[in-house]
Length: 495
Image 1: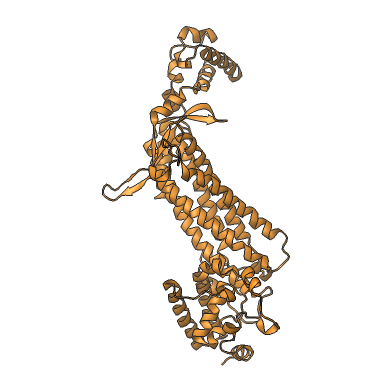
Image 2 (image 1 turned 135 degrees about the vertical axis):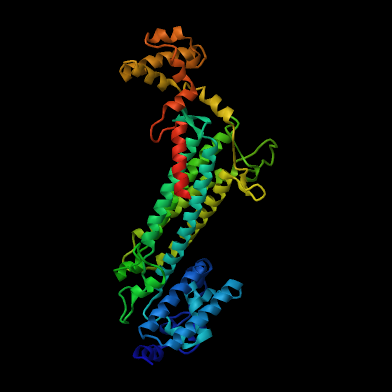
């Protein structure tokens, strides 16, 4: 037995003391914790979802302790065997989660000690629950970010599918919710693809800062044991793009930092804001006053009193859940703002908002990918359902707001007028069209020439919705040729 082992064994409580006394620190105290305090301070019934990360971190720590000669090979083998049984018990539902053991860490440690005796007690050598929980949350969140990245990709693909089917469909583009200029509906959908692309990039960036190892920082000051923290980092995949281990460099910061959780929740909040903006448009477009789209029935509900209603509950609820996620961000920021170094019990409150943010974002992205793009029909190999577009209603709406007024101004500029003069001239033309209750394209040539003699009969091409659309053939523009180029770019990126 090594000196470290002997010290650990001599100072350790009896075989089942951790389990029977419930708390690892109970020898210092003269009375048991009250049941009220147990319930108030316990986190096991929400942090038990960290069990896989806790076991993975413990096994990596144990492997390093054995490699460093801090525990023996037999102890390491016993820990592996015990953790394998605990994994089986948790997966089968046979594991007993105990409130009096407070959290996921002590529940697993107590069970391990029951199964393998002193080897289970030696596992905690060189670490604290402070660096243990920080490691667990980082490991768990890393995996969740990977899943969210996949869901963001699925949603982007769904949006690209809809865009590709509607490149030539004309939608009134709005500013201030007033008809502004005609745009391709496909172009409009690709705007959301760009948003969710940035969200995926932000998540990848958050993952990089999350994937850093705190373990080995112990309670706050490091440890006297000769740990190889970089070995643990490599075992857990906490490495940079070059495969080099990434380890927290300051023990105080390592155990108390929750920037990664806040940063993730900020990125999730922004992603939900993008979902909420899309939701708002879907809700507006689905209303009878617009009638631009239909959403598949399985994503809508009816009214208990009005039989004619189809309510867009999914987009509405997503819009509401955005406030929930943004609220979690505010809660986490407030949680951290007054904490002195190092670890404080306040940090137990980081998990529920973080967990709920992850769950809400994943559920929302998953349902939106299907609601927008439809569901794959195994028989045809094609997606069905999702959003159905009413192209005629969109085009008719685009004709109502003098959407080609800017095109007439551009036409006059090309005839030699300064833009400001052209702008003023077109304003008079719009006023005349309003008086006659007609579109600019319906004004006779003689009337248009009364506003400026340079106007000729070729003006009607630029005053048409299709002509306006085709004319914006610059990078990032709404011309169908540009939209198809963007579709090809996104298809290649998402392949």
